[in-house]
Length: 322
Length: 290
Image (tube, rainbow over all chains, first blue to last red; front, top):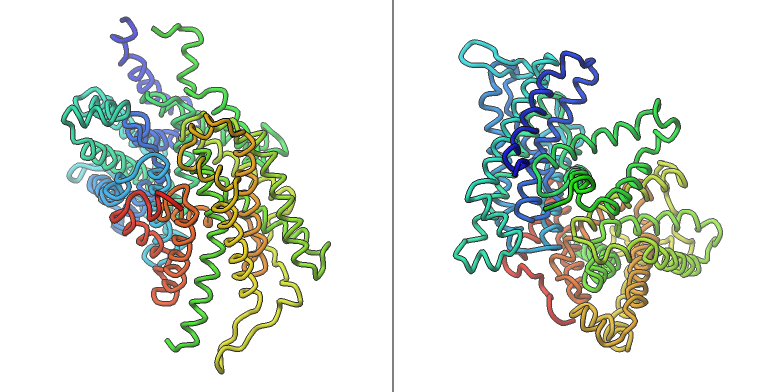
C-alpha cells in the first residue's frame, strides 16, 4: 500500500536531483548526463510499445533519425526562435512515418513484426544514406542552434551547455509525466490488456488494431522528439542514427532497466550509456578499450541471461513481491 | 535496354537471388523449427567470406575442395554454437533472443577485427573460373558468376530433395509445422535442432564463400545482407523453403532492376515489395506447405 501511494515520490525526487546536478558537474559530465537524458526520452517512447503494449519493434531508430533530420533540414539558417515549432514538427514527421509503418507492420505479429519493423527502418536508412536529399552518408550539420523562446524573449539557448541541459531535462520530465498519465488512463489499461491477451480484449469489444496503431504512432512521435533533442545537442545528424544498431541499443536499454516500468526505461538508459562509456574508456579498462564491443557484447549476454527482468527486477531480492 | 543487357541483368538477378536463397533458407528453417529469431545469421555469411579469404592460399586452384572444407568447418562451428549458446534461447521470449543474438553480433564483429583486422580484402576467383563469356558483340559475362549460380542451383535442388524425399526431411518439415507434436512423437528433437542449426550456419557460410570472389570481404558485411534475408523470410513465409526460393528470386530481380532504372532510390525497392506482400498476404506467400 505504502509503495503504491508514494509511487510518484521517487521520480519527483530523481527529477529534482537531476535539475540540481549541473551545479556540481564538470562540463564533460554535464554533457554526458544530457546525452543520457535524451536517450531516456527515446527509451521511454519505446517502453510504451514494448513494455506496455507488448509490441517488440526493432526499427524504432527510424523515428529518432527522422526527427533529427527534420530538425536540421527545417531549422532556419540563422537560428532564431525556432525550437517552439521545430519540436512539434519533428514529432509530426516521425508520427507520419509511424502511421505508414504501423499500418503495414501491425498486420503481422510476433517474429514477423520484429522483422518488418526492422526492414522499414532500414528502408528509411537507405533513403537518407543513398540519396542526395540530406547529405548522403556524411549527414548534415546544424550550424546555428535554434533557440526556445516566447515572443522576442529567449528562454533557453541550447548552444550553451547548461541551458541545453535544462531543455533536455524539461523534455524528459514532460515525456515521463505524459507516459505516466497515459499508462494509468483507460487507454493505457487497454494497451496493457492487449499485451496480456489480445483476443480477449477483442472479444470485450475493443478495436485492438486501432489501439496498437495509436500506441505505435505516439511512440514514434516521442522518438521524433528525442531525435530533435539529439540533433540540437550534437549539431550534426548522419544516417547511422537510423541504423538497426541504434534500434537494438534502445531495446537493450529497456531490458537492462526492466520492462513494464517507466523508471526501468530511464534506469536502462543510464546503465547502458555508462556501460558503453566504461568499456570504451582507456583509463578504466586499459587496452581492452579498443575492443569495447567484445566486452559490451559479452556483458549483455550475461546480463540478459542472469537478469531477465532487468535492474528493476533486482528489487525483489530485498523486497518480497506481494 | 537492348536484349544483351537485359539478359545480363537477368543473370545477375538470378545469381543474387540464389545466393540470398542459401542464406534465407537456413534462417527460415531456424525460425520455423526452433522458433528462434537469430540476428547473428549475417555473421555466418561474414564468417564464410573470411574463411574463403583465409583458406584460399592453402588450396590454390582447388576451389571446390576449399568450399567443402569450409562448409564442414562452418557446420562444426554451428553445431558447437547451438550446443553452447542457442540451445539456451529456445525457452526465452523473442525480445531476449533478439538482444542476445544482437550481443553475439558485437562479439563476432570484434573477434573478426582481432583475427582478420579491419581492412577490405579481395579474394581471387580460381584460374579455371576467371574468364568471361562473350554475349553479343559488346557484352561479356564472367564465368565465375555462372559457376556461382550453378552451385546455388545444385544446392537448392539437393536441399529440396533432402527436405521433401527423405526421412530426415520429413522430420524437419514436421518440426516446422508443429514443434510440440514432433517432440511428442519421440523424435530426438535436440539432435534435430542441432543438425538444422548446423546446416543453417553451413549454408550461410557457403553463401559467403561463394560471394567472396564477386564482392570484396569487408567488416560489417553481415549486417546489410541479414536485413535483406529478413525481407525474404517475411515475403516467403516463415518455415517455408519454397517460399524462401520464390521470395529470394523476387528480391533478386527487384533489387537488380531497381539499380538499373532508379539508381539512387534502388535501396527502397525491396522494401516496397515487402510492403505490397504485407498488404496482400501478411502471413507470407507460402506460409503453409512446401
